[in-house]
Image (cartoon, rainbow, N blue to C red; front, side, top):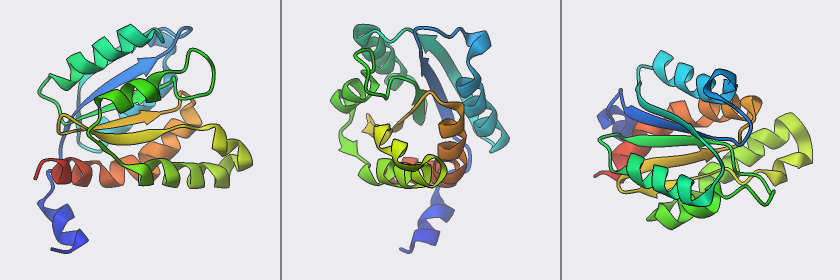
Length: 166
């Protein structure tokens, strides 16, 4: 089956959970989370869960496990992907994934490099499959979120979910 045939078989509307990780923002100040939710909705998907939590490893793991147990197709996180001592999203998500999608991070960093130059190497954005769901971890930057959503995630999310569940 060709790539295009795969995409045609994919569902066109998904149920998605959005998780923002921040020690400083509130939901009212969560521009990146709002961008993710708005772009998903505009593309025909349903945001069925949206949470903002502190960057506490135990809380992140507990929240992700809870979200993974829900009837959703994908989780998109933002925040906690950098290099500081508090940035643990990637390590926790890797514990929960059964399959990595290294091409996501590679492509994101290439596109990011085209926008911001070599600082793109500081991003640890990643994606994988956890419990049959796409688990995508984005930086907290609204510019990075918009780039990833428009150029990678929205064009391929349905296909990723379909592949993960066939």
